[in-house]
Image 1 (cartoon, one colour):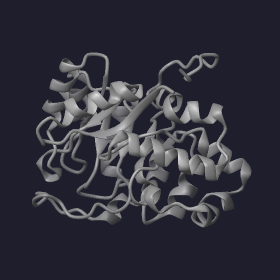
Image 2 (tube, helix red, strand yellow):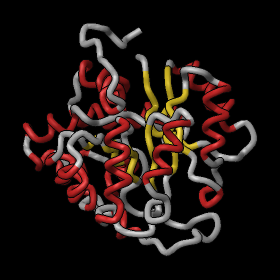
Image 3 (cartoon, helix red, strand yellow):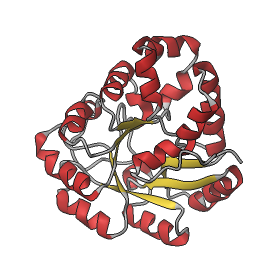
Length: 268
């Protein structure tokens, strides 16, 4: 199987990137969508992603960190000029659907830059954030108005918005420009009963539509562990081989606006 790990963080611990890329080579991970949210999360800043892209040409999809409520649309232009293909947002200074943020989203849409919106709980930071924030600012429902007003902007909702999972499912089902991953607490809690209560009650047609926008990611975990966990969930879900190929690689290509060869097999 071939993979695109579309949501990965670059930590400051020694050898973090190099060790990950060794695992990526062993597992068949062709590209990684990398974001770094700075010292608040013990991560590099955007310059770290720029260095990584130079170190591993063609392997790194850069998600530039924008501080919503502090940075304006000029930050999007700056990141685009530095070769970033997408954006990452987390711990905003206001709600994601605050209309004052619309110029940032409009610029991203115009440049064809998808946005990874951290949704759900944030938890403790490594140091003070420097601005007022709240996990409520990151509720999945906040993406509803963004997806409506910016239909050509592709959004990624990681972590299934935990703990607002039902809300996340409703928003994903409503908007074809919202993609999602299963990293974090939601993935760890999934069993057959959990799936029945959160996914399958959406109805078969809605569920099949959601699967078309599910992407694979490792976030901060060892990638082999996340492959194994996705496989366990796939078995419970009854996911087909074709759907696996889409989830592991092709849906990420669609998120990034790349051409997908429907006849090409990702099984090696």
